[in-house]
Image (cartoon, rainbow, N blue to C red; front, side, top):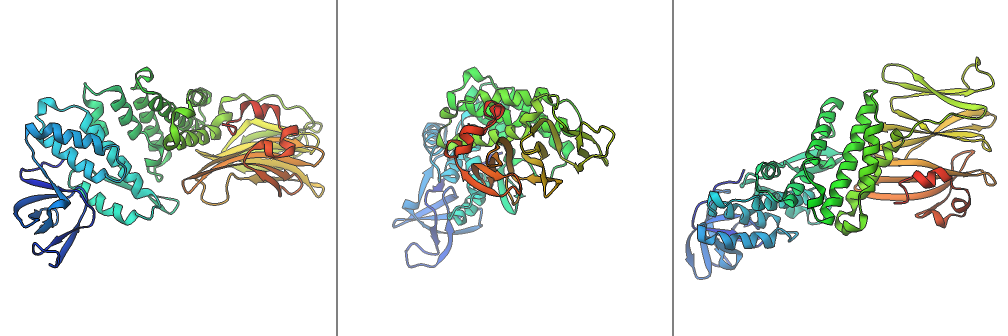
Length: 467
């Protein structure tokens, strides 16, 4: 909803603009104004405007060069639209752009309103919310701008994620764009992408409402036809669909329903992305999709028969649990060698035996975008199971996977990728099998000698870690 504006207005175009008690620079400063603040003009005195600020319920004097008049007539509408088009692509001017957008919607006749101003305002509101969520040194300037846009009905939602505040635009104008019959495909795609952001889902939602939201997100994404979009938007759409279908696959697994079709759709959408079309600004959306799809990629695979004397089996444990047992195939009636239970999703298709170890590895997914690696191995004459995690603190997104084994050095080869405090880190590592201590680490597998010789062929073929 955009606040109705009246005539004889001026829009503040400078941050920290001083509203003074008299028309001179030495007069008492009453308050500071920000880009996008809307004032009623009541007169002019020697380079100062006499104004009244309805938001703060205060009058005063403002230097004339700190504000621009905004004529709200049909004849002025094209000029206001031109300014809006300029500001929509100007980072740091979001509040000012939203103010001009509100002025345009007041000036333009209803019959001439299109989806363009709603799309522009919504995108700027989304960008402003991202700025408020970031750890930027200019964060103190963002809070006043959020207050400025509130007067136009632009609302934000706040969530706490891993001790940090996440600010999200509520998406009202994105919904408005989708209801307008004349909206262009690019505008509809912007709206759908704005309404399906994974980082703007309340992390405290339970599994049932979260699954409902993911179904809604998948339906919204199906409304846009790929062929009518530019290359960047098309790849963004595929990356978003990949992440949504990964979420749906995990939800199916939690309900003990078949998840293979959803996981295959997630992989197909990810492979349809052209990373070079995204540019630097949007490439992180692709990396985020890679992490989400990597976490569930084993859901699309079928478990192969296990060969060898040692096998892993999964059976139900306490309600909601799955228990994994290491057994000796030559002694079918003997008790399990070792048994461990989890509330996560056990990916039996991921089992890899290492006869030279001896050892077995297994992928377990305790969270939607978090996949661990269980290593069953012998230590000091007895079998144990150790859990390798993508990261150590505050699980956000990540996966770790078996990439091979070097028998001469008894080293386990692994790949891991993690999102930590908004940053993505990928590494390839060699671990001692005996105690899983880190021996070597690199950002690319070709920098590690054992990776070049002993990496697993199946891992090389199917992994997403080499994106």
